[in-house]
Image (cartoon, rainbow, N blue to C red; front, side):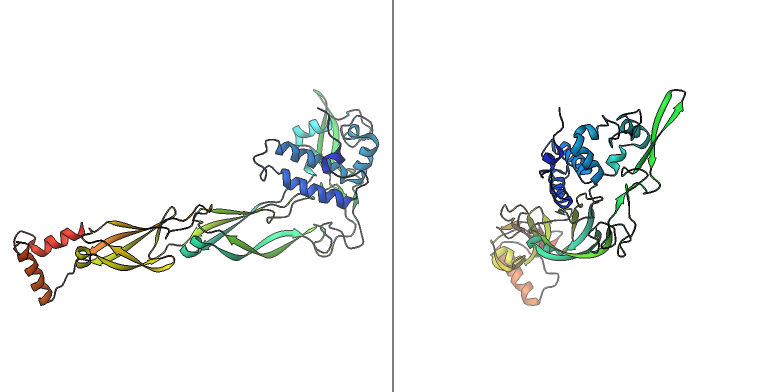
Length: 374
């Protein structure tokens, strides 16, 4: 399948400026990055095609050769093309040998590379995780130098192609072996593999084009997150290399335990203590919820361990599908000490029921305790 025109790949005109080419590349590289566009099966190939086009058109010497000879210049089909050996007899086989001896194409190593992803761990209270919030985080990261605009050169100066490797960053050479002539490549010592020479480095970044800064970002935490939830902030990671797109920032959520509430999915669990009189006669009690105190009707004759439901008093679904419930587990508390009057009343109750207060091994009060404690 024939290669597409590099200008067409980047969506720019043939007289586009370097800034226009760089701007278009950054947009397309982010759009087709395999980690960003996982649903598109062709994203990786498109990303590769965009990188290849930018690698040629962003280099003045390679662009000039491409404008004159098209893809023949990049494929080493003529002497002097930057895909070959500058007039040698080996044509375009340099990249093939380079893949064996160096692990990948020298040109591709000097192409744009996406920046690294960053990770931040954030601790939230139970209420913050339930209802969400906006929170500021401070992250140290590598950013483009504002003095030189990422170029690495002092203001008013420019970089030039390395006169040793001619901008490839690699030096290729042939050796005679018992198996024939073998071609190898190594990193250019003159430019240290960058392909360019900076005569006057930027005084701020010392020629790297990047600086280390602490940046404060405002992160919106959606309602319903839980421990293990992960938020992704696209493009907020480390700066890319050689014009590559920046990485992403991932925020990992950790929720602190609550003294009263426990979480079960989107539902909230809470215990409520009542007396055995309330259990026997029923009552309306006050229970804590995420929205504040609320009334709950306890039916008469309830047993300890019974769970009552408070609809839509739980945690909002993180995807926006409504809200969970609050489940209140009733615990009947039997008094350990009784006043004389309380004891007389209970004994009277026992006589009405036809029971003997002190009969049996456990006694009357033991049976009362067992009845309401489940």
